[in-house]
Length: 286
Image 1 (cartoon, rainbow, N blue to C red):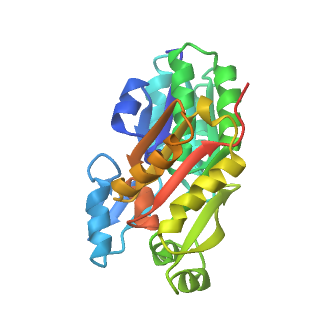
Image 2 (image 1 turned 180 degrees about the vertical axis):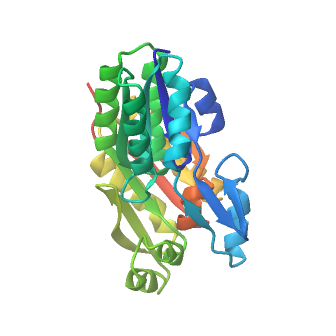
């Protein structure tokens, strides 16, 4: 490939997809019970979810500029162009680390073609953007073409998700204490989405059974050309629920694929077990 695609572990792409499209994944760090782990490499999300169910409060750290620089240098030495498809800058400092590393690399090697994309996405929303980049790179697309198409995908990626307990998001500062408190009352299930990279409460739904149907409805309201795109569902140790949502979609639509994958430790440490997230494009790149 003339262009190397790099992403971080917040993208939650399955390992087989990363391997198939030769996408390099750089892990965030997860801190659990006094130990540091690399997300997706030295710890699996199931361990984190089980610990959270038992009262643990894992923390995460962004990728450092030094780590990114080492990765970037490896590909630059092989005269490859580089595109980093990054975790939303509104949710982590990881993108900023990559941007700093890019500037350092360009000081050393002004001739290197490198771009860092703040997708304003997370989990498989970011993952779908990275996947599209990987597909284009494998097909031999030009650096500028990949950049244009992938940026468009990032700008039009929808995230619709629900969590079992807003307390987990509140601990990490992703929602307010008031939102977490009222979300836990009267069996109310929160529906959230992402606006400009930030997590925003969308609706409150009474009862868990109604949530999947409402996620499906929102997808229909916002999406375009569902049969000609790849959808994704990520889950916090809730595979059967994710499969139920996929089945609901397949009853009416025939997307190119529906990727189902666990939410990794970096995102899962904040979203918590029981999270279900649906990702799709609200417009397709022509």
